[in-house]
Structures are given as structure tokens and as C-alpha cells.
Image (cartoon, rainbow, N blue to C red; front, side, top):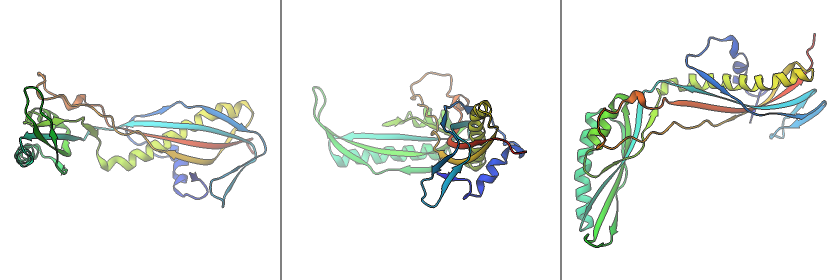
Length: 259
């Protein structure tokens, strides 16, 4: 819960409409406006030290915004599998396949390569198939967006590789600027929702009392097609753009203008 009288940065948020706009499309989203109470009203904050007083009408709205950012890289994960009559044999085959995966990924310029711990389990015999031990190993990392084709065709074609969905990512350097823009847009969205109602009841001045910032949605996932898919090549431009989202719950005190 954010209290405007205790956090300095909210002063920046409230003055954001006078600052230069941050590049990138911002799309506010609608929410429900709730008329909570009439004059006078006191709303207790969660902290025992602060009580919010509204000498007017308390209005509440949920504002939200989203912002698409340029695709910079993709996060990938895969499972590497191998099997053999014994656990030692399955792990040895898994290790050999891992060497091939590492080599292919390094050729694509992989960043932050993570190799998990291997696991094994017996696979019972079935009609026409002997009992075997299966080994599994998770691998993850990040690649430049233009390496999507290489990931699918070169890595996905290796024996024992099962690709999982890839996650488009934006440049981390722009994360803070994007969050500031989302804060401003979500606040303006909430304010725009309550202003017509405030004017309807003759209280044209809105004083923000309390803001609760909520977590945004994660990146959109896309399943990369497996290596046996036919041309045309996999195009990173067709991946969904990384989208930052943010929502906030804002309480306003609607009062009459003072002249």
C-alpha cells in the first residue's frame, strides 16, 4: 500500500503530465469505478500510524496500462533425454548429447547458459520394447532474437532434444523507464474514470489519498515449432512483442474547488 504523504517518488508521478513523454505506445485499460461513501468520511489505512481523512466523497478506481517494447532476445528452455539398458549407460549417452547441445548453443552466441541436474528413472518393459533406464536433463539460456531459426533448426534437430516455449524479452536497460511510464499511464487511467462521476456530483477537485500498485503480467510465451517443420524459416519478427503491464488501485477524495 502506497501513501502519498510518505513516499517522495509519488510527487514525480503526479507531475508526470508536464514531463516529456517516454517513447512507446501506452494503452490504458478500462476498470470499474466505485462510489464508496459521502461527506464526511474517514478511511483507516493499514498502518496504525496513519489515518486518511476525506472531507468530501471517497471514489475508488482501478487503473491499468500496458506498453509494448522492442524484442531484444529470447529466453529458451529444453529437455535433453537419453536412454540405455543401465543408468550408467543412459547418463553417458546424455552427457555426450549435452556436449553437442553446448556446442550448437555456443555457436549461436548463447548467454547465461544453465544446465540442471540430471535425473534417471526406469522404464518398464512393454510389448516389443525392452526395459530401459531413461535420463533427463534441463537446459536453459538466452539468445539474440535473430537466432530463433538456429535454435529450432540446429539445436532442435539434435538427438534427444525437446524444445519448450520460448519467451520474448525486451532490453533490460529500458525496464525502469517503462515502469515509470506505466505508473503515469495507470494513474491517469484511474483519474479519468472517476472524474466524470466527481463532476456529476459537483465535486470537481480530486485529491489522491492512497495508491496500491499491483503486479503486472509476465511475458507472452510462444511455442517454437520443432525441427521437422517445413520452410519458410522461423521469423523472430513474428514473435509477440514483449509487453509490460501494470495496474493500480487508487482512492481519490472528491471535493469542491476552492477559489
